[in-house]
Image 1 (cartoon, rainbow, N blue to C red):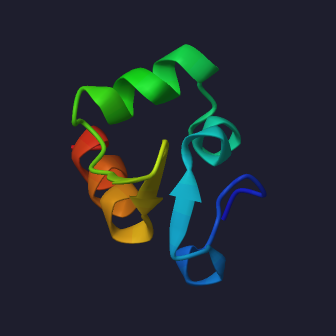
Image 2 (image 1 turned 180 degrees about the vertical axis):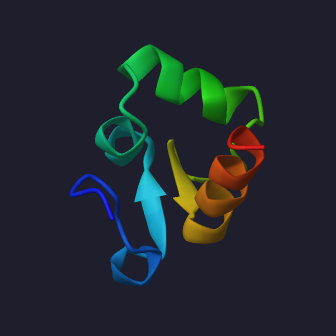
Length: 65
């Protein structure tokens, strides 16, 4: 297993968009566009978005197909 791979059991239950950047290795604009476009399901809490762990896993599964 690559040293860059993460085990999902060790990940938090929800993420801020900024936390997706190092996980997905994308830029800030790309991370926000993935959320805004609905490619990654999110929940809006006040002025911030939270991405459930399951939504990130679904996105990664679909992206790898």
